[in-house]
Image (cartoon, rainbow, N blue to C red; front, side, top):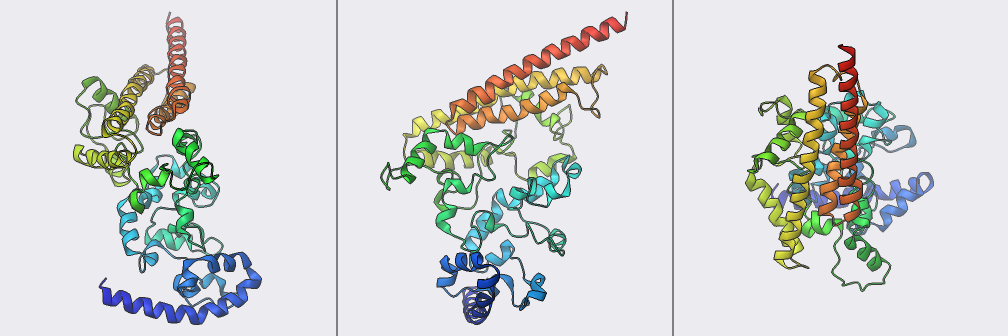
Length: 399
C-alpha cells in the first residue's frame, strides 16, 4: 500500500467515522455504556477514529445489530501495517491453525473449540481462513473473529495495557503451559510486581514477558526452541538425537526410522519447532541481546545453555518412557486405541518435560525441579513398575 493511498484512506476514515460516531454513541450510551466509556478512553477516539471504521456502517438500529462487522487483523492493518506484518510473521498468528491441527481437536465439544470456555478462548488470537470467519459470523456467534483484541482489549485498545505481563496471563497459564506461574514466581516477575506497587523506582531495569518475547514492541513473538523443545537437524549428540527422534515419532511427526510423516508439514506450518540450525540461532541471538542489557554476555549464554542441558536431560527420561510403552504395545499388553494408565503417564511426562526446560528458561527453579524434573522421575518409576507388573501377569498367563 503506497503512502498516498494510506493517507487518502485515513482522511476518509476520519470524516466518515466522526460523522457516524455521534449517532452510535448516543444509542450505545444506553445499551452498552461500558463500550462507550472504553472507546472514549482510547487513542482512537482522540484521533477521530469512530465506530464505523472497525464495524462498518450497515448497523444503524437495534434490529440489524448482526450487520455490525467484527474486525479481523487485516482491518487493523489499514492503520497498523508494521505491527500487522510482524504479527503475521510470528507464532501468535498461527494459534488458530495450531489448535485445529491437534490430533484430538475434533473430539472436543464445539463450545470448547469455538466458544469462550476452552481452547479457542486463547487460540482465537490466530488468523482464520475466509470460510472459518464466515462460520464464526453466523447468527448468535460472532465470537473469536478478531485477533488483535486478545492483547489490546476492545474498545480501548490500550498499548500500555498490552505491555503489562498480566495481559499474557489468561492464555499462558495452567497445566500444559504455565509460563505465567513460572514468570510470576521468578525473580524477574517478583521484582516487576514490586515495581508496579512502587516499591521499586519506575526506571528499575526489570523485564516483563514482553521485554523478552516482544522486543521493542515487535509482534514476532518467537523463541529458539519453540513450543515442543525440538529442532532440526537433530542434535550431534547421538543419544540426544535418538531421544528427540523418539519424541517426534510419538508426536506423529517422524516414522520409527526417522522419516517425515504427513504431520511433519503441519508442525512446520504452525511453527512449534525449528527446522534449521540458522533459524534456531537467529532466535537465540535475539534473546541473548535482550539478556545482555542487564547481564554480561557470558552469564546470559551460560544460563541459556543450562536450559538446553535441561532439555537434553529431560529427553533422556522421556525416551525411556516412550520405549517402555512401545515395547508393551509390541507385545500386545497395551493398545493404542484403548487408553491405559501407562499411556496417560507418558502424556503427563511430556507436559512435565516442558515444565522442566521452560522453568529453566524462565528462571523458576520450582517448576524446573519439583513440577518438572522430579515429577518426570516419579512418573517414570510408576511406568516401570506398571510395565513390570504387566510383564509378570502376562508371563503367568502363558504358563
